[in-house]
Length: 464
Image (cartoon, rainbow, N blue to C red; front, side, top):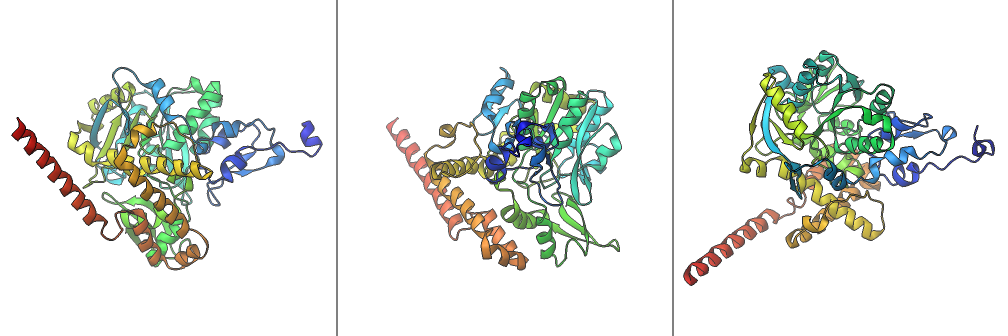
């Protein structure tokens, strides 16, 4: 027993006041995975936030060191993995290729959130011996659970996106400390940030060769969002039905609840996002600029704009290009290069407008107000030319309005009136576009801009 424990003085656990109490936890599980004495644990049936048994703490601060909730140096780390063949975009990160495609397995494609590239890629890597294991996210008792496996059936059963915090690193880090190996993992940005911090602090983790298949990420929601989503369908959950899927059926899919007699009801993706994103997304998600997952070997996601069951894929490293080519040559996936127009219209651009820039603006505002926020190292000056500074005001107000609705009597009222919650959520989710007259003002602005360009071109022509 340490002297501090013997004298009744427990070490100060820095992660509690600096991350947990400031509502910056993202639930990645890195703190649990690195703790040498089992101080921390996560029970998703209660919360994504770790529970702390301070009586076991030795004060090593390892949990705080690896925590991505407090931010991480994206630009610095990207600089270490880039080479001369990588193009660097200030709002999209490192890029080698933009690809779009789908799994050639019809079952995987149907059951996936989009085109099934991630699942088919995992199966190909195992089949060809390029990795020893893969990390997949399955379901247990209505909650996601991370599994390190080389069983193709387990990979197939884990198909589809999971819209909630998953403490994946709680499982992964101890496994790879015990037995380093070649693995591939599908990760959200914060999970990858936690992994990179852990690798810096724990030398043994560097012995594992890891392919990172990143996901474009908007927000993840606490699991009590399912109660309100079900309530908009007239269902009491848990109780009346079991939750089975976030993206069931053909693209884009629906949240699905199944009754004991085998019948089911579904709520389409975008209406349930109106409930889940504004009212139940983690505070840390609203402050995360890393929606594009710049640190991954590749980033995968839905098209969204006029979407279909195809996977958008941004290749960020040479390894990603080689692995995807290998899977295509083996007949696992079909891929084609995206046109400039497709890139401009899909999730690649959407994620910077809806996630990256708003988060940077909010963090700057919180810093000015002396309030808690994560720290990142994006080039804010380059990202915010003059016209975007006005939008920063709206992004900050969207954040403030969202959390005003989530407080006090407003929260209680909305929880008791799920239809009103959905309508309010739609307004907040698409704000400021939902402000009366906003769309008309934007159309007028575009027409004025086009008119100015025409006039300028005319006078240049006359002068010539």
